[in-house]
Length: 297
Image (cartoon, rainbow, N blue to C red):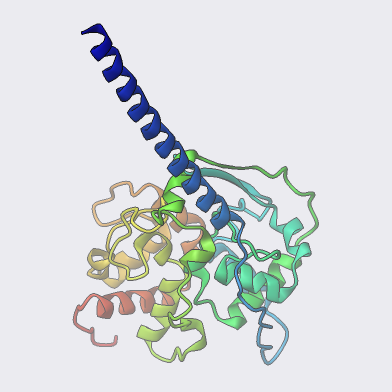
């Protein structure tokens, strides 16, 4: 009996050992895939920005930098650098733009901003390039011109930590680096006509609201590689003009409840929208969500 029991124990031990070996081998393979995704290069060609009719508008570039978040965003209030902590995924330094921008040509910067591809061809980690992808050449040139005008500041110490759980999710395509999130078949709204309120609003919403509310503006509940989950914008599309302007400038909805991050973004970034731009965004959202068009005032 004792010998029989001992034999069973040896068999169970062997099975458990093999199971552990398979598990470890599979885990190591997944970590290898994740590392490859982090290190691989992306074949996105460098394309010069189309020159406008005159020199870049630096003042407009500063306004846009605040609206889209180059300033008053991940890189600090004036591009001095910051720190991003996506709890459970990664923590990373958002570099000092005044230093980093001097390491890039304009086409390299355009590729980084729109496609999340760094100068060496690898992907950025925390860039929201899927939001910036539709930016027009003119707006991007104005932003770059503004950033290049800023005084030099030394680089911040760089830091990047990615959790094991995030690496497994990366290998299993449950999470993506910035460059892998770009769908180059999507329209670049900034390069298409913007003659109607709908067209102008679509462009502005695409380069601002999509970060938190999804590329279709129907909500972004942590489904596509972001911790900036936000609800569908169908509800706010029903706001009256004055209520919508108030929301965009203060982050305060009808009823006055605290919207958290939306309040900060509105007061530091969206507040720089002009009245007509806010009205255009509202016109787009109304039509996009199937609400009736309003008679012009």
